[in-house]
Image 1 (cartoon, rainbow, N blue to C red):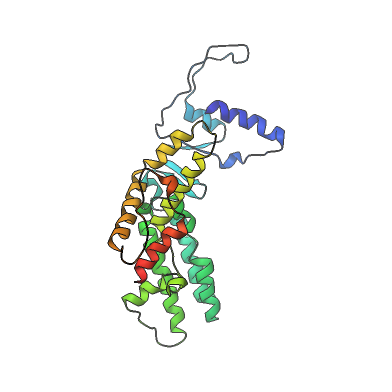
Image 2 (cartoon, rainbow, N blue to C red):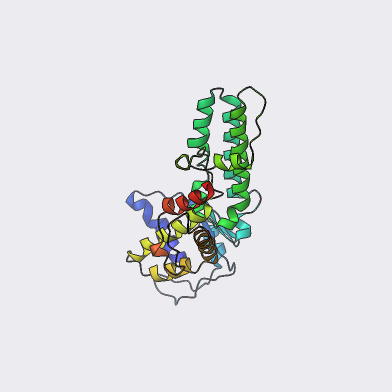
Length: 274
C-alpha cells in the first residue's frame, strides 16, 4: 500500500494529473500495521520498518481506525461510525432539512414549492441508500420523511387553517405519482431495494471485469450481513403479498441476478399503495 502511494505521489504529476492529496484518507481498522522489512539495496538502502499509519500521515493522509468520513459520497466503516452524531450522513440530512425549510419559507408560489420539494429535495439522500446499509439509514430516513411531510402539509394549508392528514393520507404522500401518490418518496421505503440493487450492480460489474481481486471482492459483497438482511426483508414482502405482485424471490448467493432498483422499488410501492 505504502509503495503504491509513494509511486502515485511521484508519478501522477508527470502525466498531467494533480491528485488532491489534501483530501486523502486511509482506513486502517487494525491501527498497528507495519510496513514489512525489505533487504537493503542500492535503490532502497534503508531497512527501517516505519509504522504504516505514521508513514501515510507524513505523505499528507488523514488516517482513521474507525472508518472513512466520506467515500464516493458516503462514509465507510462500522455501523456506529457511519451513523455517528455529527458525521457525514447527519450533515447531509441537515443540509436537506435546511433546503426544505427555505423552500417553504422563502418561496410563496404553491406549485413552485411542490415542484422544488418533489424534484430537488426529496431525492437529496438517494445516493446514500445505495451505498449505506439500510439499518444505518433508518433514523435518518425517518427524520427526512417527517421533514418532507411537514413541508407538504404546510403547502396544503395555503393560507387557510392547517389541514390534518390521516394515516393513509400521510402514507400516500410518500408514494410515487405512478401509484397515485404525492411523489415525495424519500428513502425510508426504498433504502432496502436501493442497497440490494447497489450490491447487485457492483457484483455484476466485478463478474465481467478482469481484476485479479474481483473474486474476493464479489465474495465480500455477497457475504455482507446487511445485504442478507435486506434480501430477507424484501423476500418477506414478496411472500406476504403474492396475490398482489408478481416477483420472484431473491437468491442471497446470486446478487448478480438481482433486478434493477426501479423494479425492486416498484414492488415495495405497489404493496404500500394497496
